[in-house]
Image (tube, rainbow, N blue to C red; front, side):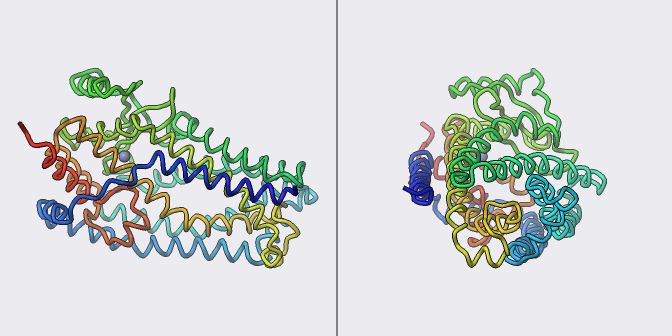
Length: 420
Ligand SMILES: [Zn+2]
């Protein structure tokens, strides 16, 4: 059998494996709480604050869609014309057009063009966040974060570029198999490495100091049967007024992180509800599910890329001989950008389901739907969220159920678990 047939078999097998993981590990059956409960919950929120959240999202909307469109147009303009391959050639020229120089410098040059277009849109977004008081960061701090982001991106980008084109150079027939394995391995590695190496680049983490709150949270984790190494506080307040908490890492790197803003703004019982939700993620190993899906998806994407590489019209547009040569970097990025447009809503759908399950976990653990609902309302108001957003945007971008859905879920839970 030819490498092409094997690539097709692998692609089908990887997609099937991802589907099995998604079927087994994502809760698909739970129905959202009744709309009547959602509307009743919405009515309990202060109307001027809801209006403020909606105004904020209306202000962000043009920038958000423009960023999507500009990102897509730049990627297509570079990838589906000879422009991208020309840039890569120029970047490699000082090194005699060596493939490694083309891969690394060409990759950076092509990415840089995209960043030049993205930068003003990112600055526009930041100006809106500041105008609405959600961001506490001055332009100096914002720029430092931006540069840190570029540095992290450059390190990961260099690993991907050098790794990928070394493989295609030395294994011209079977590169897709090695690259697929490499992509999956990288997805798993990043899941371990990100919380330990990358998150501290942007935030300082300190263990929650010993005291009543920490004791109560650790007791709740013990009651839940979830081994928690530590509860960490992130100094998010130096950049934002938004409140949040999350769980990251796998196995020994797993930790629960609470924003300092949350501790400042929410009473202890609501913080407990938030941490109970995060324990739900830990108990169900949601990070592992995400990592598995990411690894299978990355490997499938490499196989698909290889198969797309025999589409000669595409190669002619980009004026490249093969999708596996460094001159095709812009074409690869264009394909990735288009694929990302479709992958985004699928990821959001899975995320919403997983988040709804963590909410149920929090309710079952705390037995306190009142605090849970209060916490959801506060989360939405403090974060300038739209508690009941437009269904299309929720479908496209919503990583969590809407605030009113989450509040309504607490009401439904209360009905199903009446006090004795
Ligand atoms: Zn969550």
